[in-house]
Image (cartoon, rainbow over all chains, first blue to last red; front, side, top):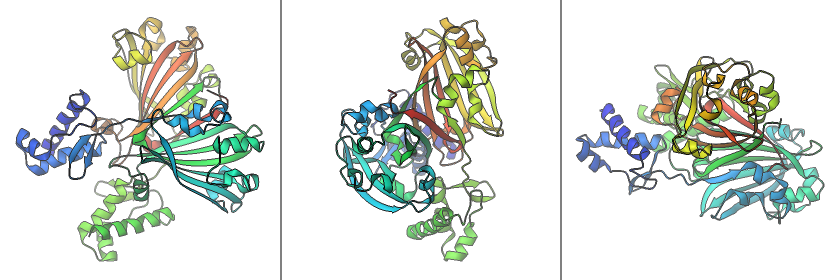
Length: 248
Length: 248
C-alpha cells in the first residue's frame, strides 16, 4: 500500500521534473489516480501528500493539488546595502522586487529595554533603551517577509527613525544624516520550519520553510547602529550575494 | 479534539521556549500526555506531531520524541573565499568546522557534455565538455552537504582538478596556478523542502529543509571558471556573510 503511494508519487514527480506538468498545473485528483493506477482512494491521497510534504505541490482547499510555482523575489544583498542603493533616496527594499509592487504594512515603533540577544548584537547593556521598528512586507497583497529593526535609543531618539514613515531613503539615509552611515554589515542566516504563529503571520502554505536573517550594521568606526531580524517566506525568495576573493 | 492537540503543543512549545525543556531532552510520551491532560492517545500523538512538523522536535524510532538540537556549522562565505583562506594551502572548506572533523566522501570526477543550466552559468555552449566533480561532506560521520563543481574541460583537462585528490589548497589553488585565480564569486541561495532522494542522500530528519547554493567563480577578467552547486542540510548550518556598504 505504502509502496503503491510511493510509486505513484515517483511517477508524478517525474512528470513535474520533465516539464510535462508545469508550475500552477493541477495534479490528477484522487479519483483520477484511483482509476489510472487501480489503487484505493487512501493510497491516492497518500501519494499526493508525499508531494506536498516535499514542497513540490500545494493543496488548495476544495479545489485540488497543484504543482507549486516558484516565482521568487530576488534579494541582492550587496545592491540593497550599497551606498548607491540608499544614498540617493530610494529605500533599499525596492531592489527586492522587479516589476511587482512591494508594500510595507503594519509598521510599529516603540522604545523598549533591550532584550539580551539585542544588547549582545549592539554591544549595549541588557535593558538599555532601544528603538524597535517592526513591519511586514507584502507583494501582490501577500505577506512575504517580516522585519524588526533594533537601534540604540540614545543615538536615534527624536529623529525620523522613531516615526512610522522614516522618509526618503529610509533608516540608513537618516543614520547617514546623523553621521552614523553604515559602512559594513554582518549577515547571518539559517533556514528552518516555521512555528505556527509564523505560519499564520506570513500565510505560509504547507511544507514551506522560512529563512531567518540577522543583520548588524556597523559604522566605519565599528559602532553597531542597527540589528535587523528578518523572517522570509523561503518560497518567495532567492538570495544573492556578490563576494570578492580578497574580502575578509 | 484538534483544539486539545494544539493546546498541548502550545504548552510544550512554551516549555521549550522557556528553556525548561532543552535541546536533546525527551518530550513527555503519549501515555504521559494522556495522563496529564486527560485526552485520547490519538490527541497526544497529534500534539507531538505538530511539534515535529514545526521542526521543533524529532522522533527517534522506538525511543520517543526529543527537542531538536541545533548545533550548527558556521559557513563564513567571505572567509572561505578569501585568498588568505586558500592561498596558503588549506582547503576553503576547513573554515566550515571549528572543532569537528569535516571529511570528504564519495568523490567522483568525470568529463561530460554541459547541461543547459551549466553552460548558461559558465557562458559555454550547451554540450561543451565540462569536468564535473561531485562529493559529500561528513561531520562526525554524518552527511551535512553535497557539492558538485562544474569547470570548463578546455581549461582544466589534464590537471589535478580532474583527479579525486586535487592536492593542497584544492580546486582554487590549482586554478590560480593555471593563471585563473578566482577574483569574485556570485552566490545564489534558496531554501526548500528536500526531495525523497535528497532526504536519503543527506539522511535528513523529518521537517528539515535544505539550502541550495549555486556559486559561480570569476577570474579578474570576468571569465567564469567554476559553477558549484551545493545542497546543505539546513539543520546543520548557519551561513554568514560580510558585506561592505560600498560593494556593488
